[in-house]
Structure formats: structure tokens, C-alpha cells
Length: 361
Ligand SMILES: Nc1ncnc2c1ncn2[C@@H]1O[C@H](COP(=O)(O)OP(=O)(O)OP(=O)(O)O)[C@@H](O)[C@H]1O
Ligand SMILES: [Mg+2]
Image (cartoon, rainbow, N blue to C red; front, side, top):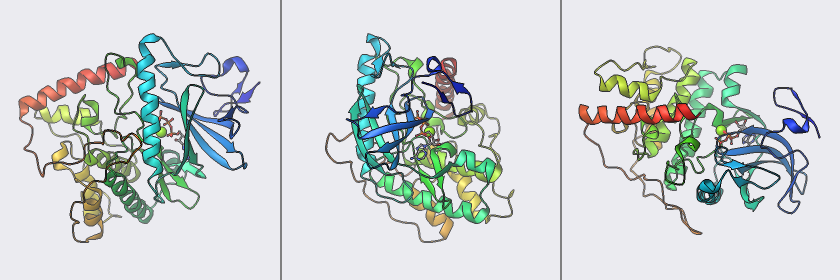
């Protein structure tokens, strides 16, 4: 069998990577793979047809550092990875179940999750359009579109956080812009809260995206919460407005710990096409230290619209079956700033972890 890869290169069968080939049936013939879309650190995404010939997107749980595919079925690379792969598959299934309960026009809809080939699959709405990373190079959004897109995504993120969930990987390539130019969040952080452990070697962990991930995502046991997703959302909109992502949050943290100025250049005062309060809110959400950020999506919306700030809502816990450990989202009102010695310790940990991740990518 041969095919053409995404970059137009003709592939012979021996050139295939780990992805399933076009024509492969899944789940007793209910779905047929049409095309490989992308392989990421945790999964492989395909365009497929369901039994009614509707186009869908199928995401396969395939943590690439831990798995191989000798034939159709997915196998751990070695016995050492067996338990880690099984855990990731279970987390992938739980994440799909949680996501399937979110009904929001700006969140991709999950139709089904099933097991096949000794791994798990998520069936998603096919979104006609392109991801924001691509869209901004081809047809950038204007100021009104940017404001509207941010308000829509804040509403989606508020609903996700109300459910006790976090996205954990908001970035331009994880937001689709559909054919109506409506932003839709995809690629939730299934399994991304996996931390290195005895059965999960560090070499398999890809948990951060430089420029978009807040500093706490680089730290094992970092204090993740809605403020972490809001940092990544702000970094995404910084990219839309300024044409590039903000500096890496580890670099920023290291600068602060050494008493140097934050290398981040605030948006406020630099872009006349936007109200100063709009830009200032993005700058605030991009604060290095979590306690200085905007704490909730609704609070951010109120800053943009000028509406009164909302009361915090109780968090809905994800329901059965097998409720996952909810993401920590209750947060004390404000934390004192980190003393310098603790900040320096953080930096050391960040740099060490960053080095491990860099060395293994
Ligand atoms: N529902 C969808 N409709 C249309 N295209 C999609 C959809 N989901 C994903 N895509 C396309 O496939 C690409 C990869 O998908 P996704 O972001 O879910 O996985 P990934 O980043 O490769 O994986 P991971 O980070 O989980 O390892 C997206 O950037 C987008 O272009
Ligand atoms: Mg992605």
C-alpha cells in the first residue's frame, strides 16, 4: 500500500510510522480510517468515516515513548512500560467520558470512546476548518474577531472548570477555527497529568509547551488549577495580538528569582486597536506567579465586558463511572509571594526538569 504524507511525500508501505493505515476498520467495522492527521506525544489523530459515512475524527491513545505497534495492536515497548501504558489508557477513557458530558459550542463534541487494538479510541466531531496556529499565518483574526473569540473560549473554559476539569494544553494548535471562524477547543490533556514515576520513565513525559505553559506545569507537583489554563489561554491570545508567544515561563521565573526584570513585554500600551483594559487583562492572566493571575474565566470575562465580577461557583465533580481524581481547583483567596529562597529552589527544579524534558524530546 502507498499513500501521500501530509507534506506531499509519496510513502511506500515500509515508510509508514506507527499510525494505522487508510482502510483500517475499527470497533467491529463501525469506523474506517481514511487518513492520518497527526501524531503527537500521547496520541495519533485520524480522519475517519463512521458506518453512516459521516466524517469523524478519531484519536488513538498511543503514548509514543512507551508503545510500539508490531502489527495492528499496540504493545508496551517493554515490560517496564506495561503498567504505565495501562494507566494512560484508563486515563484517556476517563477523560473522554468527562469530556463527553460537556455540551458547549466551543468545545469539540465527543461521540464515543471504545477499546480496540489493545488501546483506546475517542470519536470526535470533525471540525471543518483549520487550527488557529495555521489560521493565523494564512488569514489572521482582526481585533473584533479576537475579542469575540476570547469571550467564547472563556465561556467554554468556565464550563470546563465548573466540572472540575482542566484542559492543560491550551495553545493555538489546540483550537480549531471552524468554517464560520468560530473557535473550538480540542485536544484535552488526556493523561497529561502523568508525572514521572517508577513505572513511567521521565523519557516518556511530554507535558509542556514552551511559551504557552505556565511555570507550574514544568514542576512535578506544581499547583495546577484554572489559573494554569488561563495563563495558556492568555499566551495564545498574546500570540494572536503580538504575532508571537510570550517568553518561556521558566525563563521568566528564573529572571525574577535572580532579581532581573521579567522579559515579558506587557501588551497594554502597545496595541491601539484594543481597549487598554482588554490588553491589561491578558497581561494579568500571564503573571508568572499563579496568585497574581486572574483566578477564574468568569472574572476575566467581567474584566472584558465591564459586568460585575461573578461569585465563585461550587465545582461540579465529574460523575461515575469511576470518577477521576478531580483537578485541584479550589484555591485559597491569595497566597503570599514566594520568598526568594523558595523561588530559587523552584527555578532549580524547573531547570532540572526542563533539561530532562529537552534531553529527551
Ligand atoms: N475534531 C477535529 N476536527 C478536525 N481536525 C482536528 C480535530 N481534532 C484534531 N484535528 C487536527 O489534528 C491535529 C492534531 O490533533 P490533536 O491536537 O488532538 O492531537 P496532537 O496534538 O497530535 O496530540 P497529543 O498532544 O494529544 O499527543 C490538530 O492540530 C488539528 O489540526
Ligand atoms: Mg494538539
